[in-house]
Structures are given as C-alpha cells and as structure tokens.
Length: 134
Image (tube, rainbow, N blue to C red; front, side, top):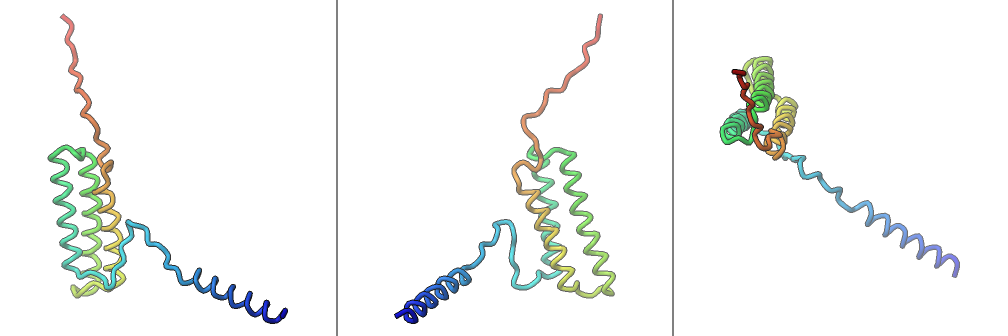
C-alpha cells in the first residue's frame, strides 16, 4: 500500500511540474518579436515615417521645438549608423545582426515618439513682456 501511495504522489508531482513548465512566459507589450529581420528598405521606411511623425507632432503642438530637434537627432544617428554599416559591408545588404540592432533602436525611438508625454508639452506658458517705466 505504501508503494502505491508513493507511486501515486510521484505521478501527481510530475504532472504538476509538467504543467508548470509548459506555460508560456508572457511577452511584454512593447517588445516586438520578429520571425526574420526586416529588410534594409523596411528600416529606411521606418526612419522616414518616424521623421514625418515628429514634424507633424511639432506643427500641431504635441511636441516642443527642442524635443523635436532631439528626436530628429536620435533618428539621424540611427540613419548614420545604417549608412555606416551598409558601407562597411561593401555597399551590400546589411547583416541580420545589424538589422536587429537597428530595429531595436527604431523600436525604442518609436516608443519615445508615440508616448503621449514625450514632448512634455502642457499648456503654453504666457510670454512675459517687459514693462517699460515711464
């Protein structure tokens, strides 16, 4: 009887452990999983779209001029890295590692751009004009 109880408990514990290990780990919402690295044209297109988004947001007041310049500089450094990697490979296709690195940087940049507080612009502050004394 003891061996049957021991056997039943062992099977039960193995089943519980198997179920615990079979669960999928959740993926955080801001991490993108790619089945294959994007093409160089896709990376170029993402940079272009993000630059356009910054221009539009700064025109409608969602983004301060200083923050817009800062975001444009981030995108320029990503684009400069893309060009440097491309020329380093003899003007051939980027390697998969380079594409993944650029994609991760663009994902971070995108998160900064779509975050509602990325411009930290609230209501415009009144401009004080100096009062001249008579």
